[in-house]
Amino acid sequence: ETGVTQTPRHLVMGMTNKKSLKCEQHLGHNAMYWYKQSAKKPLELMFVYNFKEQTENNSVPSRFSPECPNSSHLFLHLHTLQPEDSALYLCASSQGLGTVNTEAFFGQGTRLTVV
Amino acid sequence: GQQLNQSPQSMFIQEGEDVSMNCTSSSIFNTWLWYKQDPGEGPVLLIALYKAGELTSNGRLTAQFGITRKDSFLNISASIPSDVGIYFCAGQLPHHQNNAGNNRKLIWGLGTSLAVNP
Image (tube, rainbow over all chains, first blue to last red; front, side, top):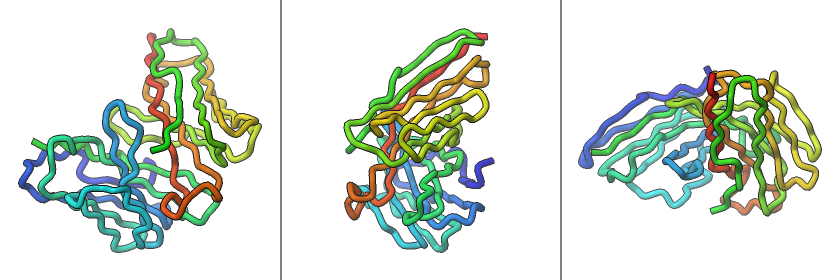
């Protein structure tokens, strides 16, 4: 148990569906992240939030839409995805972008399959 | 984007053997982190290193922050079957090398896949 919880663990969706991934952290952290993990590739940082403000969007297609209502919760809204978007989506948190301790703590991930 | 060179890509060893893996970069890092990922799970932090030359242990795991600040290694002693998984290194650039969009972003290796034969 890392203190970061993601739901659902598995998701199969059609290309015309709309779904959302949820992440919640109980570590009192101020920064939250969405990563995409595909086979044979390094972890790809998608979005960064610090104190609820989005600080980074790594050229992610608009079919991925993040939302951070507070420092403990992070969502990733999905719509009209493509099969190549199938991957493990990982949420992580850390103390905050301005702190020395940069360790990221990860959730268990959502295995997304787009059919 | 930037990437760390992590090697070996995979290892298949006998239970009880020692394991060594490393990460190198062309850039200097301020922080090195080592994670382990079990199948179907997210990465779990094993060891964090913050100072050049630092040697830190966590049980049977030992990691070092290279003196040049461009590399790090992870050793596992007396491997056991539950050591199976993918090990990732991650590094953070010094603040002055982070542009506005990369503040505190971690750079990741591709991982070392470890299999242990009981």
